[in-house]
Image 1 (cartoon, rainbow, N blue to C red):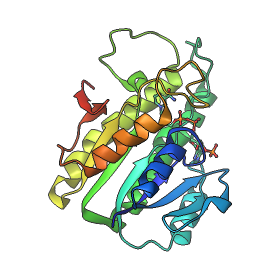
Image 2: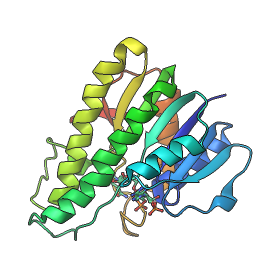
Image 3: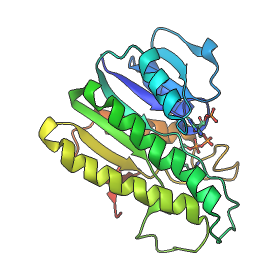
Length: 218
Ligand SMILES: NC(=O)c1ccc[n+]([C@@H]2O[C@H](COP(=O)([O-])OP(=O)(O)OC[C@H]3O[C@@H](n4cnc5c(N)ncnc54)[C@H](OP(=O)(O)O)[C@@H]3O)[C@@H](O)[C@H]2O)c1
């Protein structure tokens, strides 16, 4: 039976993924800042985690009393700016990087010793982190810069972990109905959860950027 971690498991895509995997008899450790700890059951263990805080990352790793794990779904992410914002605000850029980039990388690096051979790290990225978006525009710069950095980390880590037989993938979930995506979004979190499950189960190539179960351009 597989065991792994889903960050940002308190709502949205992360919560849907937590439930989807647990329903398929996968043991999942879910984490977020404000998580309802009463949601624990045989397949789900929930812990508090603030990716912007190194101490919280260390406590999380101590608390889960890490046995070996098979996957990490780096799903937690923040979009702080208004959708029509194009200007750089350095504080917002730093705050965004603290979660989407630095916290995500710190957690991943600290968990690497616990990953089983054959393991898989999935970084939930975005079309807004892509260099190939035909509708590329000047808006949401902090978020976009952070997700493009996460994509580069994905490719670098995939090469680094190839000899260890650990896969690393990025996922563009598409516009999804969550607090971040809003109610008008075209996709349901459960559809993305199914894709994450399929990525975990599939015998696929490492170091790729996935969208709707196919490889997309970076
Ligand atoms: N929805 C979309 O249309 C869309 C499109 C492309 C990509 N994405 C990506 O998909 C992922 C999930 O997004 P979503 O739409 O499900 O967003 P969401 O509904 O806003 O959920 C974000 C999750 O991240 C957690 N989180 C935020 N800050 C955190 C921190 N400092 N430490 C730990 N956890 C933190 C939140 O929990 P707490 O607040 O409790 O900590 C929450 O569980 C994100 O990486 C996002 O960038 C979403």
